[in-house]
Image 1 (tube, rainbow, N blue to C red):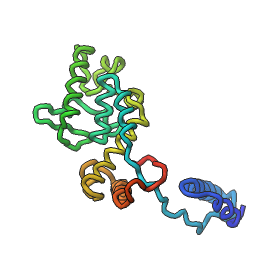
Image 2: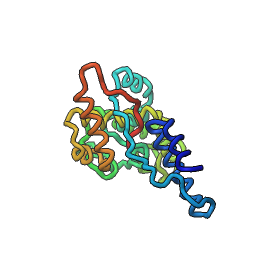
Image 3: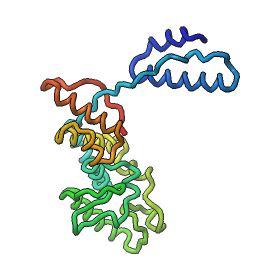
Length: 232
């Protein structure tokens, strides 16, 4: 395979497909040359380029309504609130401890960041804690979210698998993304503000800010197009 062969192939691809395929080819041929299987890397000097992400789109009311309707237990309602209100990730929710909840001072600590406890999340927390007390009155597990398997194991957190099964990973992730985008739309597309509020890295905060900026500049009824690829 020659450099021209690679160029001919990638010209048939666009967007993330071109980016992903070229990254894979570069990795493959780099490995082959390092192990003496080829003399020349045909992908050398072919620039991958910066991947252009699609503009993140806010959820429409019907999508939010479906998510709310699907939350039928105290655990699922609380998990979705953590995602929709506090933009918490699956692993962060699974690792929450009882001590991370300060009902008296209306504070919640997620991944080491202290957040104000809003009325909705506070109510759902109270509902869950009452359910937890009645269902597992003698548990010694100090994790906030427990289940039948972890209630008898003091040090075991709710697994990251059980949290999305409980609330639906896709639904939860879309609510988390929507919450961060909503913050950028409401308070302005400021990546520094987003990084401070949600603990985002620089690249991810800039992506949310760029999407919010394009949405705010778009004509009414004509939002920027493109499918949503999951943000970090």
